[in-house]
Image (cartoon, rainbow, N blue to C red; front, side, top):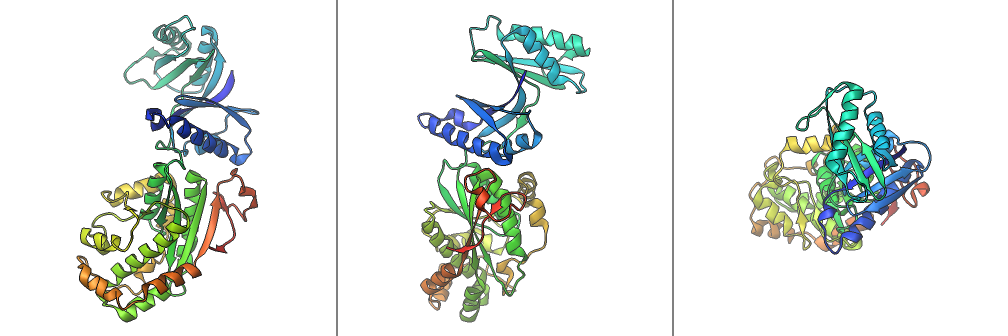
Length: 411
C-alpha cells in the first residue's frame, strides 16, 4: 500500500475551454503548499482530481491541514494506492478503518477504468462483506457511521475512509487582482478572504492614525496579513499614515460629515494603489446598515469618490456569520484583541447617516484633494508576505509562524 492524498477539484470541473488553465494554476499552488515544510512529493492526475504521493515518509497531518486551505479543492482524502486486485483493495479498506469505532459502514466504488472486470456495485458488495465480517458491523447505505471510498482508475485503485472538506472556490490567482481596505476588525479580513476564494489575489491597504492612536492596530493587521497569505501565498500590504489628512478634514469641514469624508479619501488612496499594482477593483468589509457610514445612501456617496468597482462581499451578511467565518479562516483571535480604528480618531458625536451629495462635494471643495492623496501615497510603506515554500520565501526576515514578512520599503 502506497500512501497518497486524493485531491478532488471543486467548481473548476464545470469550466469549459479554460479548464486546463485553471488546473495548471491549481497544480502550481498545490506544489507551493506541499513544499512549505520541505515535503517532497509528486502530483499527478487532472480531469477532476490530483493525486499527491509523498516521495519519502507517510502523509503528515500538517500537510493535510495546509492542503485543506487551498482554494479550488472540494475535499482532501488521505488514503492509499493499491493494485487493481480485489484482495488488495479489501486489505486496504480494512487497514483504513483500523482503530476507529463504528457500528455501520457503507462502501462506495467509482470504476472509471472499465478494463477492471468487476462492476462498481459488485466491488462495493464484496469489500463490504469483508469489512462486516472483520469488524462485526452491518451495512447502512443511508446514514453510516463511516464510509469507505474506492476509486478504480488508470490501472490502480485508491482506497480511503477520510473525506475532509477543503476550501472550495477557484484557484488563487485565476481572477485577477483587487485592493482590499484592511482593518484589524472582523469584517475586512473576511471580505478579503471571500474574494480570494473567488480566485482573486488581494493586495491590502491599512490606514492608521499614529501617533494619536496606538501602534497595535498596525501589528494586528500584519498578523492578519500573515494568516491570509496562507490562502493566497503572496501578499502586499500598504500601510498609510492617515492622521495628517484627518487633521485637514477636521479643520475645514462640518463634523457630521467627517466619517464620510474619511472614507471617500480612503477610496481615492486605495484606487491610486490599485492602479500601481494593476488591480481591477477595490474590496471593503462593509455590511449594509452595520454602522453609520454603511447606510445605502452613505455607501453610494462614498463609492462615487472612486472610478474602479467597489466590491462588498459582506453586504448582506450579519455579524454572527462574519465572526463564524473569521474563526474558520484563522483571523478571529487576532481581531478579538482591542485596537484603535483610525476612523474613531476625531470621530463626530453625531455622524451623518443619510448624506446628500451636495454638502459632501461642497466640503471637499475646501480641501486640496490631489495634494492630500499624493502626500499619503508618498509617505506609505509597503510590506511583502510570502508563504513558506514559495520562491523567495527564504529571503524574508522572520516567518511569524504563518508566512514570511519582508522588511518594509517605501512603495
